[in-house]
Length: 409
Ligand code: F6P
Image (cartoon, rainbow, N blue to C red; front, side, top):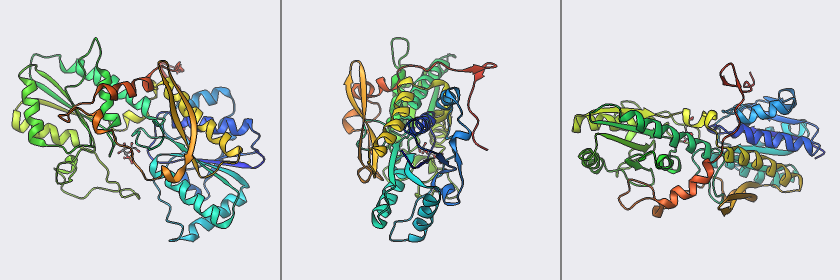
């Protein structure tokens, strides 16, 4: 690589998004890139010419190892939608001026389906003006909803956190001899991959949650209350896992039921979803009159680096490596994908595909991987997720807590 590299992080963070940054950085350095720059707060910050030289912060192998174990986006993130090339060329002119000034030859963007749109738009513009800068997408999202790729980095670790925490809550819920319903809200606005992963808590020492509701299916409040009441006839402790994005037949998010004001939206038009468990807990309390708890995993599920899956960290690192190697070999306008090549033992390999096939599309949990009643996932679902949560990284603890590399200030 005889030209400089720029890399950015975008969208919701994960506990392994920095492992992908480590993969991009170390590989670009190995391949001779003179400078590897990092965008501050993604493309939004880059448009304001905010960037750093990553070598000023990641100085040795220990830093690289710490970076892999540090959750959240080291470079900072953004939720910024680039306008369509035909709508506002000025933004692209500015961006390419900055890229030229920094003598960038290779551009990497680590993100989910919205962020891949950035790579798609930049590729269109680069082709239009005959630029030879290589643009590559590096996948990440705890939602696991990118198409083409078997799964996304970030999902396995979040799934491990969800399954572990649900298991711990199941223990806690059984403590007293009384009727208790705990409703747990899990992220994934449009896809139920992470919510369904709660079922992985089930094993010889744990029954798993009683009910699981995914956003792929319409949520029926009356049916839900009837199911809880039915389960309560058999046991006093009931655990329900719900996706933040479940909606009733009228299309309304359950979390919006008690809203008195409009919700904030990001530049992609996504409403902030929060409060689903609280709404359901109130309805249960009202109709069944028992003790209820509402638990929202919220940001914890995507920053729980102490429960990183080793498989996930390794794959997150390798999508970064693969993106740099592909760009160095002349590929552009592509996104790295993970292909599952074997189940027992699990093995994966990296490939690439046209970014236009991925940007703005969404992968649902197949209907066949949800039970007929629509309130649990099937064995096929569990078999698909299990390998992705396997393995633990050796933690680096200092003074009793995990050591991180501090965010750039
Ligand atoms: O990007 C994925 C995600 O974690 C979703 O699961 C969730 O709905 C959203 O981000 C939350 O976004 P924010 O951090 O902007 O509230």
